[in-house]
Image (cartoon, rainbow, N blue to C red; front, side):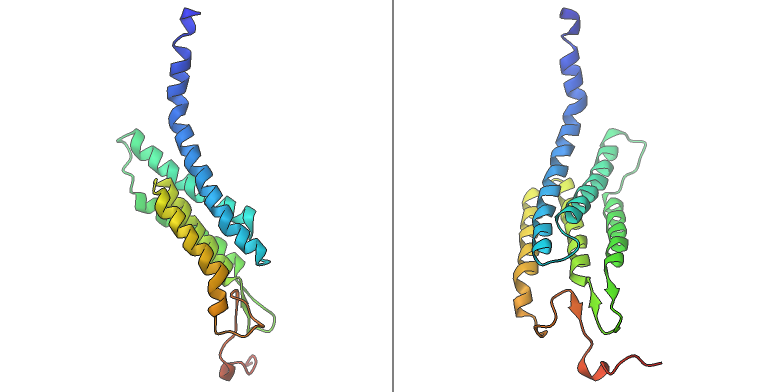
Length: 175
């Protein structure tokens, strides 16, 4: 048994840091779930699972960058590059959510795309270890999504994910 006494501390040392990063990713996923729940309750296609996946993925990308920068001096890691890469990738995802309806005077999905983008920013914040800031931003995002729509100047026919051009421009498509 004495020959194996070194195994547990050795294995613990190997996995201890990974457990730390997994914890951060779980926090990011949980915060993203709160935003996703609001979107799902609003009847949007991008709900809990989508927001959680975005949050977990964004946190993972930023965490891997943090891990690599701390392990070796061979790499010159700029944390802002990881943030920019996540923002760009999520921008493409958001672009796929936004679409114009057949009438061409409705744009749908803008708020959902923006909430996914903001969720990724919150997840990156968690990856860098700023939990209070991330939770505060999630609360603000939740409040914006849940209550600011009541102050919108749009008519009841439109929710915050749709927009219509001003009445003077809504004469129809011009050939």
